[in-house]
Length: 258
Length: 308
Image (cartoon, rainbow over all chains, first blue to last red; front, side, top):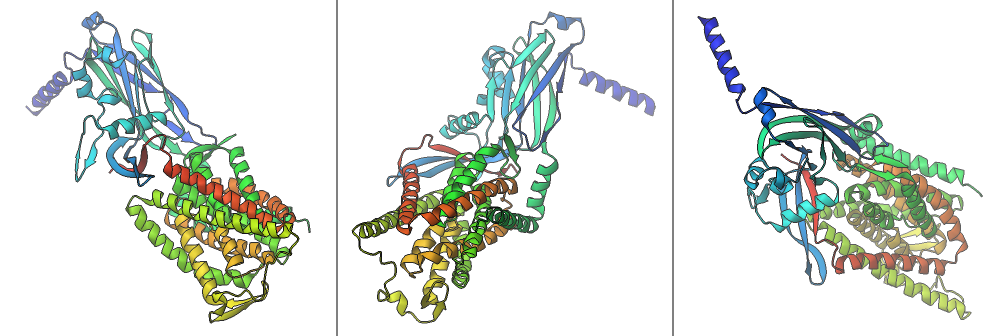
């Protein structure tokens, strides 16, 4: 009796997971899952490979696929400040605090986003920087402010620093079901965990999605310095102080002329 | 050649940093100033976070001033007693300055106050030095002897009690103004992230009448002691000292300081003061233009920390 019930449950689970609409499966693979920061690190490029697996004959009927890959970095609290002239001097007067913004955000697509999916879908799925939510701290509440000049300025500044980007032709289909995209990470991106969310569209509808992840870590000497500075501050301070005295002394001996 | 700075978290060109260290070191050796007021803005300009720049420059200035001080020590051109008395006042000044620094940061107006402090101090000190040295140059041009020290020209400062004799500098002066000057230098240094040599040198010359022969060496000893303490404090409390950045800066800086010290010996005192005055004034005007001219972008971003 118990066995029969288990079989029924397993079957029910199978039926639920195999939704009839999901005729495609999406596989995503990154060229590197651990980006190591060493002394000659100046940023890195990762390659994302994707394969669309069709299941069942009906899938073949679909039109060409569209892909959008969203890379998000560690979440940070960032404050955007605005300067105004007060008594002839430019000073920060107003500011907005974005409490949960990604330190890195890259939207890589195979086609312009508005050609891929309608506005409603894009807003719901948060596709593209314009439709990404940046919750702000408003007094003591957290919420979204539409048409906020601070939000627009924040995105512009992040774009200027290469931390936010959106490219309509970054995903290239090598065959109708195999695609690749290059993720450019400037040296300024922070260490931590990064997520790559890949969404597959057909005829303007989301048909499959998957995630891949990578991490940026410091190793070797860089890691040693960071750990020493953070965990043994006093010892690190005395070591750097000693280094300063030694360097000064060596220089004065080396250049002694009298 | 690019090298990644572990604490500053950015890659930099190692030769650019070496050159900057050398140039600032040359100036610091020549004039007996730490050079922090030049180095910190330069590092911020190439993209180092201001907090890391201030903390790492203290280490660089420590090395640079140590190298400079040994050069003056060999020529017996420094006054250890005077430096230690100044340091006693400086310790309390630094503590007061750090307290004000923390309070201003909480108000989110630290940048403005630092900017205003730079403008006011640098332009006033620079203008005063230019005016004084121009008068001195004019006097010597007209054939009159340059009166560096007039025995009868004692001010009210010399009437204060608790007199101490500073043998090397050949001055006999109350401990009160010496401690007060140390306090002011420590206070301003903590807020502005500078050693304060460019303030100390004129103060010692004009207020205490310390002879030009010992003033630069003495200033370097004090700068070294305060900056070495600041390095340890910054490392222990804020964890912001970038040892790699500091090392590159100090290699360039110490070499530059040696050449600067030699160049400084060949230039007459009043011309040296005129040059330093012009340099300080121009940095002050640069800061003033930053405050007064419309910025390229009225918006700026500051990272508060990782999201909760």
